[in-house]
Length: 83
Image 1 (cartoon, rainbow, N blue to C red):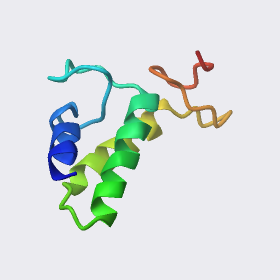
Image 2 (cartoon, helix red, strand yellow):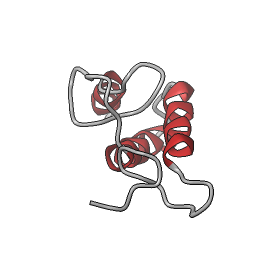
Image 3 (tube, rainbow, N blue to C red):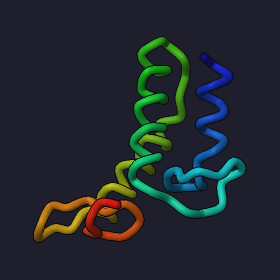
């Protein structure tokens, strides 16, 4: 479980979130970000140390992707419809 959590952290884009690449390529999407955040939360609950910055980066991405008028959270762009 610790190795899995470390792999998730290595796949994170610096200062932000996740997409599908390891090593990360700088792209982010809300779907993978939420899955990786859930995995890290499970690790944290299992008493595995997880860098808090990963959760903060995920929240930053969700803030950037959410249209304030509609509340719609886009996949890779603010407020875009689901795929």
